[in-house]
Length: 357
Image 1 (tube, rainbow, N blue to C red):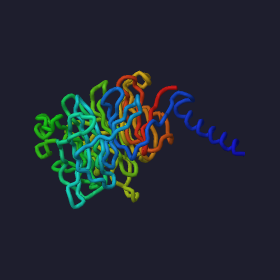
Image 2 (image 1 turned 60 degrees about the vertical axis):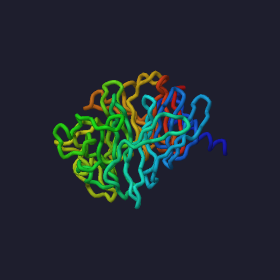
Image 3 (image 1 turned 180 degrees about the vertical axis):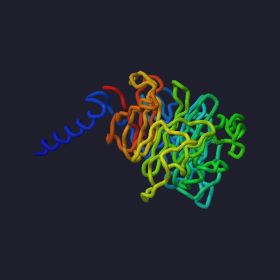
Image 4 (image 1 turned 180 degrees about the horizontal axis):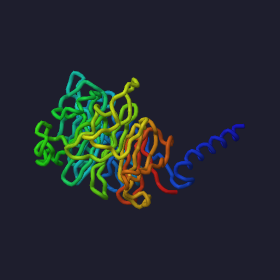
């Protein structure tokens, strides 16, 4: 009887898995247990730096399997969704986003940088979102580098219409230079005189995916909506995605209506999900392991626990495919190996590798 039950379970797993990706096409393997990891970045073709929300930075050697902890000096407030969040490496500099403790339970989405050192990272802040807010919700915090610019998402901290106030950072996408200085062609210096100088676009809720396409060089984001209304779209200078005037097709968690899905005068996303799948990290794939996916967006999700592939070459006819679902749990981050194109994921409690069989 036990053998029969196990056979049935194996058949169900095989059916569910193969129904999305085709039998035997890919292999998923957990390679390291972790404690609530959030962000990851390659610092070489064999080393990953990974953040854990509780405040630890781990260095993992993918060849030897060695795991070491990197000491740092950040003042983190782990509160709700806040903690040590994204991490990004570029030209011997490590950038991190985190919820910075400002006392009396108030915190900000902050960004710091440090020279790469595999034993200890001495960070200095280059951006601090204003104002500090007493909330454990919606920090955003994803980072992306394009040329000499650092883009970052600043969540609206559960404050809703603050995303329509460009005199405050929450609910925006910011753009600063890699040293923290402010580009002189940001919207404030062009035609948005009342905007804070770091703000590049307003009207987002909780943008947890942010990436630069290696093909068209545009900045793309995924936004975690409320009860419905997740989206994938392009970040556009000086524009407004509309939160919380727009609901992107979703509702409040109470079930009450927020606003229209879209209307003229606001940035229109490329793809919406209603109900919400809880989008997290994204990347525009470029690599050899899955070369047939080159140029397509890979979108990870938390609640839906899926990897989705979007062919958005025709933005009026976006084609979506579920690559896998319910295989590794909630997916927080995605990285493509810089040499071989294999794909690494952060789940709720581990580091996973996806490759072809």
